[in-house]
Image 1 (cartoon, rainbow, N blue to C red):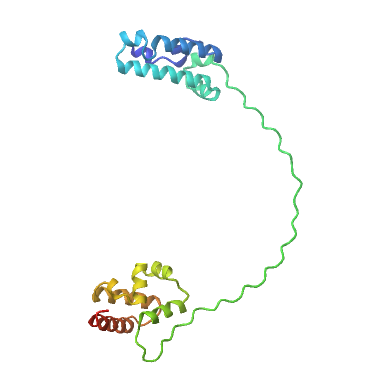
Image 2 (image 1 turned 90 degrees about the vertical axis):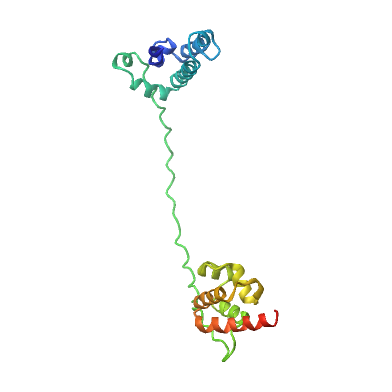
Amino acid sequence: MRRILEQSFYELLEVSPSATPEEIERAWERARVLYGTGSLAAYTLLTPELAAVLASRIDEAYEVLLDPMARAAYDARLPVEEARTARPAPEPAAAPPVPQAAPLTFAPPDPAPPSPAVEPPRPFVPPEGAAWTGELLRKAREARGLSVVQLSERTKLSRLHIEAVEAESFTQLPVAAYLRGIVMCIARELRLDGQKVSRSYLERAAGASKTGR
Protein backbone atom coordinates (compact mmCIF):
# COMPACT_ATOMS: atom_id res chain seq x y z
CA MET A 1 0.00 0.00 0.00
CA ARG A 2 2.90 2.32 0.71
CA ARG A 3 4.13 1.79 -2.88
CA ILE A 4 0.77 2.88 -4.30
CA LEU A 5 0.76 6.07 -2.24
CA GLU A 6 4.27 6.87 -3.46
CA GLN A 7 3.35 6.50 -7.13
CA SER A 8 3.26 9.51 -9.42
CA PHE A 9 -0.09 10.91 -10.48
CA TYR A 10 0.30 9.25 -13.87
CA GLU A 11 1.02 5.87 -12.27
CA LEU A 12 -1.83 6.31 -9.84
CA LEU A 13 -4.33 6.90 -12.65
CA GLU A 14 -2.53 4.38 -14.89
CA VAL A 15 -2.08 6.79 -17.79
CA SER A 16 0.90 7.89 -19.86
CA PRO A 17 2.59 11.21 -19.04
CA SER A 18 1.45 12.31 -22.52
CA ALA A 19 -2.21 11.42 -21.86
CA THR A 20 -4.87 13.82 -23.10
CA PRO A 21 -7.38 15.47 -20.75
CA GLU A 22 -10.06 13.06 -21.98
CA GLU A 23 -7.90 10.06 -21.13
CA ILE A 24 -7.13 11.49 -17.70
CA GLU A 25 -10.81 12.07 -16.96
CA ARG A 26 -11.72 8.49 -17.92
CA ALA A 27 -8.82 7.15 -15.83
CA TRP A 28 -9.93 9.20 -12.83
CA GLU A 29 -13.48 7.85 -13.07
CA ARG A 30 -12.12 4.31 -13.24
CA ALA A 31 -9.82 4.88 -10.23
CA ARG A 32 -12.70 6.32 -8.22
CA VAL A 33 -14.74 3.18 -8.89
CA LEU A 34 -11.85 0.91 -7.89
CA TYR A 35 -10.42 2.77 -4.90
CA GLY A 36 -12.86 5.55 -4.03
CA THR A 37 -14.72 5.81 -0.74
CA GLY A 38 -17.25 2.98 -0.48
CA SER A 39 -15.58 0.81 -3.14
CA LEU A 40 -14.99 -2.91 -2.56
CA ALA A 41 -11.21 -2.48 -2.44
CA ALA A 42 -11.45 0.36 0.04
CA TYR A 43 -13.80 -1.69 2.22
CA THR A 44 -11.92 -5.03 2.16
CA LEU A 45 -8.24 -4.22 1.58
CA LEU A 46 -7.63 -0.85 3.19
CA THR A 47 -8.00 0.65 6.60
CA PRO A 48 -10.38 3.63 6.73
CA GLU A 49 -7.43 5.99 7.12
CA LEU A 50 -5.55 4.64 4.10
CA ALA A 51 -8.71 4.55 2.00
CA ALA A 52 -9.33 8.23 2.74
CA VAL A 53 -5.73 9.14 1.88
CA LEU A 54 -5.84 7.21 -1.38
CA ALA A 55 -9.18 8.74 -2.43
CA SER A 56 -7.83 12.21 -1.69
CA ARG A 57 -4.67 11.54 -3.70
CA ILE A 58 -6.70 10.29 -6.68
CA ASP A 59 -8.74 13.50 -6.66
CA GLU A 60 -5.57 15.58 -6.34
CA ALA A 61 -4.06 13.80 -9.34
CA TYR A 62 -7.19 14.53 -11.36
CA GLU A 63 -7.20 18.24 -10.46
CA VAL A 64 -3.48 18.75 -11.12
CA LEU A 65 -3.31 16.87 -14.42
CA LEU A 66 -6.36 18.63 -15.86
CA ASP A 67 -4.94 22.07 -15.08
CA PRO A 68 -2.36 22.88 -17.82
CA MET A 69 -0.23 25.18 -15.66
CA ALA A 70 -0.38 22.96 -12.57
CA ARG A 71 0.44 19.93 -14.73
CA ALA A 72 3.47 21.67 -16.25
CA ALA A 73 4.76 22.56 -12.78
CA TYR A 74 4.18 18.97 -11.61
CA ASP A 75 5.95 17.52 -14.67
CA ALA A 76 8.96 19.73 -13.95
CA ARG A 77 9.35 17.96 -10.58
CA LEU A 78 9.18 14.44 -12.05
CA PRO A 79 12.29 12.26 -12.42
CA VAL A 80 14.11 12.74 -15.73
CA GLU A 81 12.82 9.49 -17.23
CA GLU A 82 9.18 10.40 -16.71
CA ALA A 83 9.63 14.06 -17.60
CA ARG A 84 10.87 13.13 -21.10
CA THR A 85 7.44 11.78 -22.05
CA ALA A 86 5.39 14.42 -20.29
CA ARG A 87 3.25 16.77 -22.34
CA PRO A 88 4.91 20.14 -22.97
CA ALA A 89 3.47 23.09 -21.13
CA PRO A 90 1.04 25.12 -23.24
CA GLU A 91 2.37 28.37 -24.63
CA PRO A 92 0.61 31.32 -23.04
CA ALA A 93 -1.52 33.22 -25.51
CA ALA A 94 0.07 36.43 -26.68
CA ALA A 95 -1.64 39.48 -25.30
CA PRO A 96 -3.26 41.68 -27.95
CA PRO A 97 -1.35 44.87 -28.65
CA VAL A 98 -2.50 47.80 -26.61
CA PRO A 99 -3.52 50.71 -28.81
CA GLN A 100 -1.48 53.80 -28.14
CA ALA A 101 -3.61 56.70 -27.06
CA ALA A 102 -2.87 60.14 -28.31
CA PRO A 103 -0.95 62.21 -25.78
CA LEU A 104 -3.20 64.34 -23.67
CA THR A 105 -2.60 68.01 -23.25
CA PHE A 106 -3.73 69.90 -20.23
CA ALA A 107 -4.16 73.59 -19.83
CA PRO A 108 -2.42 74.94 -16.77
CA PRO A 109 -4.89 75.33 -13.92
CA ASP A 110 -5.92 78.75 -12.81
CA PRO A 111 -3.94 79.87 -9.82
CA ALA A 112 -5.82 79.18 -6.61
CA PRO A 113 -6.92 82.23 -4.70
CA PRO A 114 -4.82 82.87 -1.63
CA SER A 115 -6.16 81.24 1.49
CA PRO A 116 -7.40 83.65 4.09
CA ALA A 117 -5.04 83.97 6.99
CA VAL A 118 -6.14 81.92 9.98
CA GLU A 119 -5.74 83.80 13.19
CA PRO A 120 -4.41 81.78 16.11
CA PRO A 121 -6.87 81.37 18.96
CA ARG A 122 -6.68 84.21 21.38
CA PRO A 123 -6.06 83.46 25.05
CA PHE A 124 -9.24 83.50 27.08
CA VAL A 125 -9.27 86.28 29.64
CA PRO A 126 -11.88 85.75 32.39
CA PRO A 127 -13.55 88.69 34.09
CA GLU A 128 -11.46 90.17 36.86
CA GLY A 129 -12.11 88.39 40.15
CA ALA A 130 -14.72 86.03 38.65
CA ALA A 131 -15.07 82.55 40.09
CA TRP A 132 -14.36 79.66 37.71
CA THR A 133 -17.74 78.20 36.89
CA GLY A 134 -18.69 75.52 34.41
CA GLU A 135 -20.04 78.22 32.11
CA LEU A 136 -16.71 80.06 32.21
CA LEU A 137 -14.82 76.87 31.37
CA ARG A 138 -17.15 76.29 28.43
CA LYS A 139 -16.44 79.79 27.12
CA ALA A 140 -12.70 79.19 27.52
CA ARG A 141 -13.01 75.96 25.49
CA GLU A 142 -15.02 77.65 22.74
CA ALA A 143 -12.54 80.54 22.64
CA ARG A 144 -9.83 78.04 21.75
CA GLY A 145 -12.03 76.58 19.00
CA LEU A 146 -12.36 73.16 20.60
CA SER A 147 -15.42 70.94 20.72
CA VAL A 148 -16.13 68.68 23.68
CA VAL A 149 -15.07 65.69 21.60
CA GLN A 150 -11.76 67.32 20.65
CA LEU A 151 -11.06 68.27 24.24
CA SER A 152 -11.84 64.71 25.29
CA GLU A 153 -9.41 63.32 22.72
CA ARG A 154 -6.63 65.67 23.81
CA THR A 155 -7.04 65.19 27.55
CA LYS A 156 -8.13 61.53 27.44
CA LEU A 157 -10.97 62.50 29.79
CA SER A 158 -14.46 61.11 29.36
CA ARG A 159 -16.73 63.32 27.26
CA LEU A 160 -19.42 62.84 29.92
CA HIS A 161 -17.11 64.19 32.63
CA ILE A 162 -16.27 67.29 30.57
CA GLU A 163 -19.94 67.93 29.89
CA ALA A 164 -20.77 67.43 33.57
CA VAL A 165 -18.04 69.90 34.60
CA GLU A 166 -19.34 72.55 32.21
CA ALA A 167 -22.97 71.94 33.23
CA GLU A 168 -21.99 71.82 36.93
CA SER A 169 -23.79 68.51 37.30
CA PHE A 170 -21.92 67.81 40.53
CA THR A 171 -23.87 64.65 41.34
CA GLN A 172 -22.47 63.07 38.18
CA LEU A 173 -18.88 63.96 39.04
CA PRO A 174 -16.44 62.00 41.24
CA VAL A 175 -15.29 62.99 44.71
CA ALA A 176 -13.21 66.12 45.22
CA ALA A 177 -9.80 64.40 44.98
CA TYR A 178 -10.59 63.07 41.49
CA LEU A 179 -12.60 66.12 40.43
CA ARG A 180 -9.60 68.33 41.13
CA GLY A 181 -7.49 66.29 38.72
CA ILE A 182 -10.20 66.47 36.03
CA VAL A 183 -10.54 70.26 36.26
CA MET A 184 -6.76 70.76 36.31
CA CYS A 185 -6.41 68.62 33.19
CA ILE A 186 -9.09 70.66 31.39
CA ALA A 187 -7.59 73.97 32.51
CA ARG A 188 -4.08 73.09 31.35
CA GLU A 189 -5.33 72.06 27.91
CA LEU A 190 -7.11 75.43 27.71
CA ARG A 191 -3.88 77.23 28.65
CA LEU A 192 -5.24 78.30 32.03
CA ASP A 193 -3.77 78.26 35.52
CA GLY A 194 -4.72 74.73 36.63
CA GLN A 195 -4.17 75.35 40.33
CA LYS A 196 -6.23 78.53 40.37
CA VAL A 197 -9.05 77.15 38.23
CA SER A 198 -9.37 73.87 40.13
CA ARG A 199 -9.34 75.59 43.52
CA SER A 200 -12.05 78.03 42.46
CA TYR A 201 -14.19 75.32 40.84
CA LEU A 202 -13.92 72.95 43.83
CA GLU A 203 -14.98 75.75 46.20
CA ARG A 204 -18.06 76.18 44.06
CA ALA A 205 -18.68 72.41 44.04
CA ALA A 206 -18.31 72.27 47.83
CA GLY A 207 -20.78 75.11 48.27
CA ALA A 208 -23.27 73.36 46.01
CA SER A 209 -23.02 70.12 48.00
CA LYS A 210 -23.80 71.98 51.22
CA THR A 211 -26.97 73.39 49.68
CA GLY A 212 -27.93 69.97 48.31
CA ARG A 213 -27.52 70.78 44.63
